[in-house]
Image (cartoon, rainbow, N blue to C red; front, side):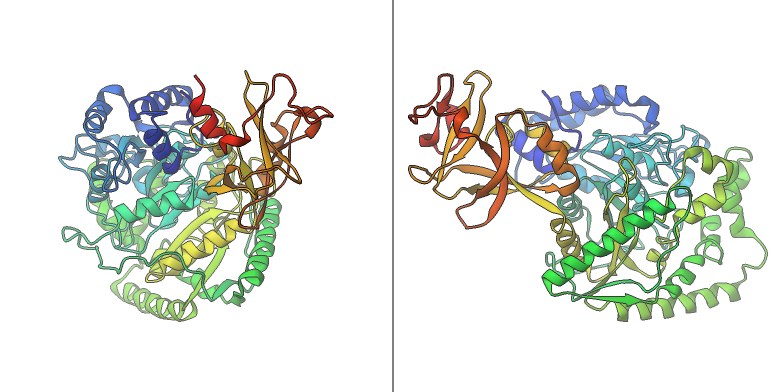
Length: 588
């Protein structure tokens, strides 16, 4: 059995419900992939058959249901989040302890049927945005191992990008749930502060910490949010929020009034990605009737500096200083240097209150400016090779947080999504920010942004769900939009009955409505997918029964009918069945 590299909850649900896969089969394929990707240093506690057996045995006794929305969905946990009976290290062996119960968020996901595969590598004590500060090895970028993976949730992001899980949990204090998403071409959702419990999470800055999710699709991230969010009376930082009321387009999209700073050897490529994304935002805004306006973001940059250059870094020392002092030589030198900066001279009570007052002014201002609006920034202004970070770890890490550090300090929600890549293998991402009470605007913007650069494609054969080529669609980044019918002007043929290659032929008369599945294809990946389709099949315009026109798989008339209109030998017309699925179900 094959599983797609881009594992999604939607694919897993369909595979389980159709009987084409079981959780045990999916986990077996994942274990094989883990063995093939050891060099990426994804794991601290890798998955094993023995550790996973209790979860699989529990699934054997149940079946997919509405009250188990994550039934059989494998996920990964950053190793500063507790999983019952599995050591938590925070990427520091001397810190290791074994929790007697899972973190609240993990327990919710498991109760919903999800399978916790193991614990992922991270920048030690969640201190870093680069993914190389771990005694368990530098976590390599899933798309180009020379490059950093982003941190601190490095292993969590890379596990999803390598096809080892459908989603993963990270944490985010300064950007750790967003930077790795951008660098590995994923969706990264950072919920509002307190909407997900942080009970069972090793603190970095306890008042700012969030648990986050990495996924291949926006829909999957929102599905996980629906399970994970909620007030936890056992968590002192938990807050009560009204449930999101579904996606909604903002009235305005704000962009920085000055071009962001781009850095490193890939600065120009990131600048090109940003400009392409701005053009795309302009197109979607014009089509949707949404205002695009500029916003002075200089005060957000000043707010960001409070996290490390101001007194807030003292919170990290307050949480971890006792351990560092009691275990000399056990903490990475660069990590210890950052933590100890929280005990430096000059961080007085006066400076803390000055920072608190300044941040309150920033929160008040940004809440007013983002009333029914989102702010869009690059997630990162560049990236680095792992060797470059090794040569200058502090400066490189600081650059990676230019457009992320302000977020939690200003009490914003954030959604990192893939942008417009300017170079193969070098993904560019953007992040949308919204007020803590306006999460629905993030989802609405992301949906519109994705749709603005997608090609809608109808498939009628083995690329449909449940058939052998469906994984090709998912690997190309396609997302299922639904089942549709064509206009009643098509005939459906199977070329080469043995190979079973279906194709549609448009006719002036004698046609019928044929069942198809429609997918949203990223425009950048559509050409490569089309090149894989063998002649005499080709792509062209297909009219749907609702009048919309999409791309779809067609066949040349001469390849299925002779001059007299008789079906050629070896070809089967299946128009009467209405779909390839119906015909295939009748085959012995």
